[in-house]
Image (cartoon, rainbow, N blue to C red; front, side):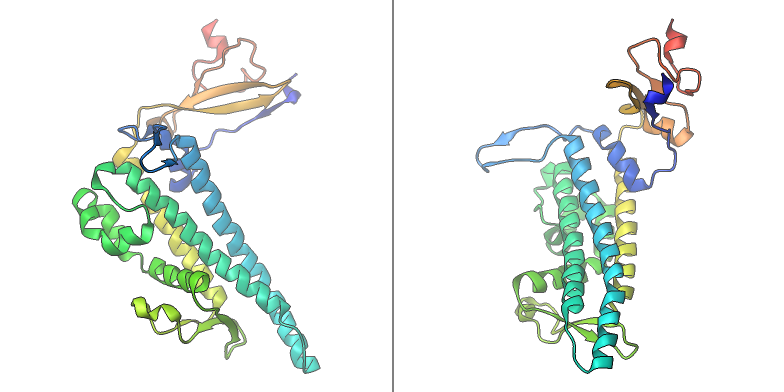
Length: 295
């Protein structure tokens, strides 16, 4: 009977971001209330699982696109080498690299927009704009008044200023092109951006795309984990349990266990919430309140 079940292992090695997504429903006071604001004519993202899924999916998109750019660089180099040998060639792989790189930049922008939107939910009385860039560039002093730590995070996130500038130019203004650096690595250049009238730099240049995406991805990863840890410490109820599956299969039957943040930090066993008393993994399970203990 047991072979029909898939056992979900207990984990105590989540990143701060993963832990935040897992316990996002414990934020207090509760902010995930569904409602339809007829004046604004929209339905706000509400339920905690929707936020968790959205943040997870958007960061997964960043990670996938990061790897796609790394995957594409050697293909660009191969195309370049063939062009040198033949004296002519195509720029197909170069165009694909450009598209993937700009899509990677845009995926970071999209993820940060989710963070900005979430912050407006966390601090509704602050009347913040939903856009991450506006929070960072125009409302730092307001944010400093109710969350100085987050304000300092925004202030030091120089990597985002670059991402926002590149994304804005690529999306709304002029095309950028791939150039060949002195060490034959792909670079990214626009030496006369249209958006300079808005205070942006006179040009956008990345000398080494691979180096740039590695550094940018690392900085984003550090930022989101720091943000997650901050909100966990500041707003999450450490004693509120959250549910998760512990096994599934066997004709659709599944088991449920709960754990609090304090349980996680102390590496305490989860609590079994199974409703039946013939659990197929009872003897191997380390949870408290197992069916056999309740007989």
